[in-house]
Length: 186
Ligand code: XMP
Ligand code: MG
Image (cartoon, rainbow, N blue to C red; front, side, top):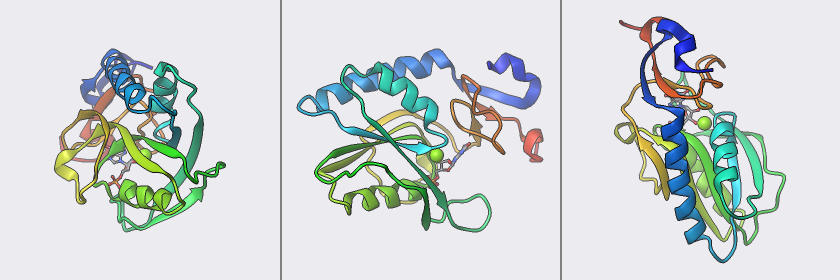
């Protein structure tokens, strides 16, 4: 589905599918160079990272093994609290493995901060983060992001895996949701 199919539900398209793919290709070249000795295990965070994972993994010129986790952040309302519950754990043993977490978006950074420490505590050799999007002005923790697609403003965005009430994940582009859709101002 493209932005044009959604009428006035989106206010601005931030990054088109072509831009996302071009940026992922650049990141893939960096990842290939950094992991020249041994490919990392890609760990996708469900459900948002499905699109990034599919495109990044196919862009990489090495055997890209994939595993998945689903986590939920406890806390009031929609804001991340940093207290995370594992809903679906990895299938693989990551002892002595290089792990690359693949994520759709980093907002406060609390979820990934917790996840990175959790994976490190299992004896991974290294744990790095690759995210398609990051909201630098929303970050609440110091989080090293090795591979970042784009920095975006602190708006609620949808598309390319990101949802509002489970809709919009299959939008090809990343766009700011129009406030009237979620009952906000505008
Ligand atoms: P934290 O704050 O822990 O949260 O970095 C990251 C998670 O919050 C969700 N998130 C969003 N989802 N549009 C979305 O559809 C957004 O603009 C947005 N900002 C944060 C997302 O699940 C992410 O993994
Ligand atoms: Mg997510």
